[in-house]
Length: 294
Image (cartoon, rainbow, N blue to C red; front, top):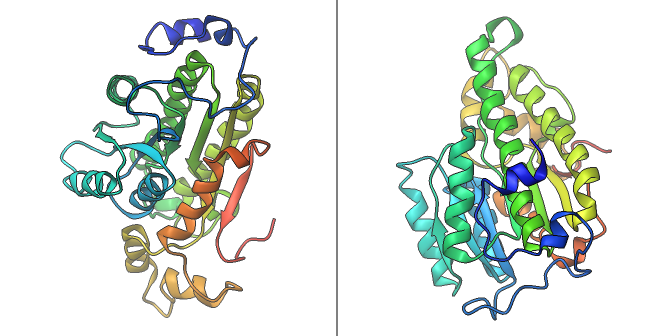
């Protein structure tokens, strides 16, 4: 599918036809059109998996930074309303767009609803992901495919359709996704998960090289053990039989001597989403207290 074929599937409020061909890209990726409601905004950010944990923290930090923030999670995720209320409480516009990021039409509809409501997309944070802890011999095809559908295909679809919108807008943008420490170093129980997070880094490398001509940067953050519901679930699986829980083992073997918290990751995303990060692309930023040294 060509870029023009992708563009035909999405609605655009701000189209610069020459930018679609990659010829005229503004030098400032955050030079926004003069439209009502956006005068004091840095632009529009969309965060998938935004109802809790790291996604919630990222959404709130970007709102603090001055972005209007759309949030996504699966239908029926009640916490989205609470996060939206917090964003509005910071004086920023928000929008809830539910959907499954592994489904192409859901991602197309998500992009459309954000553009229709907030007027564009300038920062795409593909944060949604799942962790199924299984050893090699316990991993089923179904579990492997489900992990890849959400963690890899979901990122691919978000990159593809958010980037198409950014190209049509003609003002560059930021694509940011969730990889993991497990995307740099494999560990027991993470057979499918680790493979999926390595794959996210591969997608990012290619997207960064192809999209630079449009003023779009593409980077990933790689958290270590971070204090979220996912870490609690990991502890339940890994503790016992004389083994330390993942959180304790991580803290014991990390120079900083602790597990991470969601705001540690949100701080990195804040920078990657900023104008000041414009010469950084294709990178995998570790947020792990020094557990993995590149």
